[in-house]
Image: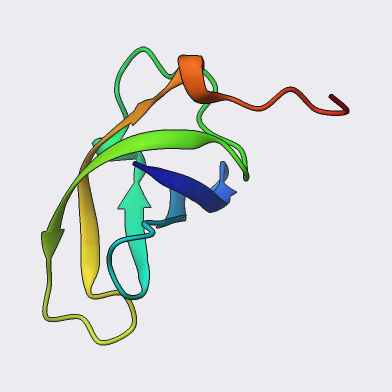
Length: 77
């Protein structure tokens, strides 16, 4: 599980914070579950399958990202 830190809809890329691993996990639109109509937004809780990469900036890459609707916060609540 992780939290979307940033999502750039125009470029189709973003970052997810995974609490049990160091650094952010990089993701692109190809990793998004097809049911995620309209992409993501910062603060959303997602389930992530990831792989370690040799890239120094983002050593983790998302292979699959699924939004967890049952774990979303209600703004202003």
